[in-house]
Image 1 (cartoon, one colour):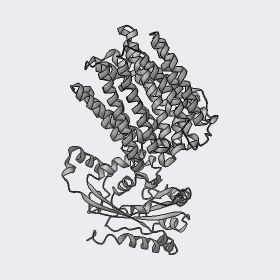
Image 2 (tube, one colour):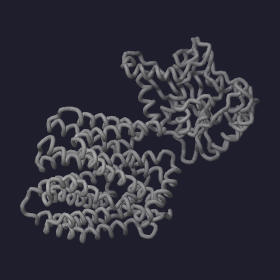
Image 3 (cartoon, helix red, strand yellow):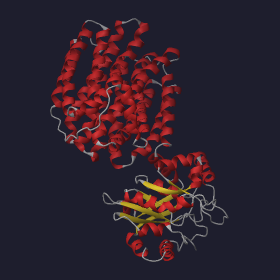
Image 4 (cartoon, rainbow, N blue to C red):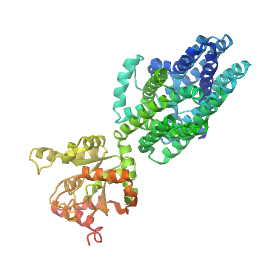
Length: 625
């Protein structure tokens, strides 16, 4: 925390000045125009602060190639001083164009140094400090937003303008001074980009596309900024029109919103440092959507409305931080400035759209309908993210499975390998659900499975398997057309292990039909373990508790339908019936058998398979009685 402190202090001064200026223009500048233009002034002020991001983010992404991030940051803070004199002139002469010009210049200044500012987080704290750094950075940013908004709402009712003239200049000076106390071990940027916004978007989109799912992370994070910007705009209008609140009372509510986001960011940074919070982002988005529907539909008093908005803000902060950290974790430091500039450009397109959407909605409908639009967009996008992010699918699946199963993991620390090592995972196949259960429990491990071709034929399963980079295994019982491909599986698996991938496949190739794990004459496990890369660990997975369940072939002549059982389970969850059912205990044991498999691979294929079968059978004595 201590090493981030100078960055946090500089950031809070800058954000506070941005919001102080913007809110003052919204509250004071509206009095300089006639009633029919007041909504236009509020939306134009919000738009002026973000418009420069649309045109200058590409240039901001290029700057770290020529100058250090600290130098860019400090130069930008020095630019803030003359901008404040433009703002003061606007207030002094009651000139809305000068005031809006100052807001526009502040947006330009912020756009130019934003990638450098956020790029310093990894330079200061390293990869391990990303979650805490982002959590603290965003918390102080929203705290600065809170202070700037509250102070502006009070100063708007003061008759003496010299107070906010002085404060605008003081914050600019303090931000410039504090920027010179930041220390960082900078990584040199090495990605050349275009300053043309269209070319920059096109080229950087390809770079982002190299990281599977990162586009969706940026989209969802940009929606948070849409939500935040929309709330700031709509609350100023809604609190006056629907709730009859004064500017100072509205300021309190805006402050409460900022407090909620600040608290959410702090808690999110703490939790994401310890847990895999990216998987819970869809749930948080859906919760926010439901709260926004309450704000739209329920007849709330001002106090009740404030509570709902505070909850929206808190959940929004929790929602935001795992997405922020995901960008920092996935992208190398040398390319981070470009990706952050791309994110700035995309997110401020969304913020600009928030102003346009609010203006469009409020032109034809009551202001409260903005909450309905936000709920629909946030809820739908969160559901899409759930089906396009493997970590989210795993975490959701794990949460639902734990409603019906008491899953006990034994020896999970076996999977915590030294850096540079990888693993070959060989599980038993007790039921059609155990692959789903394994991947749900191992949500934080990057496992690449070998999967029967039949599962790729279902649109949803095929999409999900693609997220996990699953390798399609032809079913030779259906035809001989896949024989050559099956023969290539050995090299596919070995090549993946040599690249450092973690590979998972079932040695038996099918779920058990009689409760016993039968590998027979299958060759893949024997072949791979005979040519195992030096740093690859073989981990066997022994499973107890699924034989005899409806997911197994117990007393059945055919493999149960995975899709039918999933739909049945979903029905039990939605009706609440699952909460009245006794949980089935399932034990999943992880055992490192690298030494054993190297020894067994000296035997014949059948002897190898019998040895592996005997190892699996050790845990089944009681279950098969």
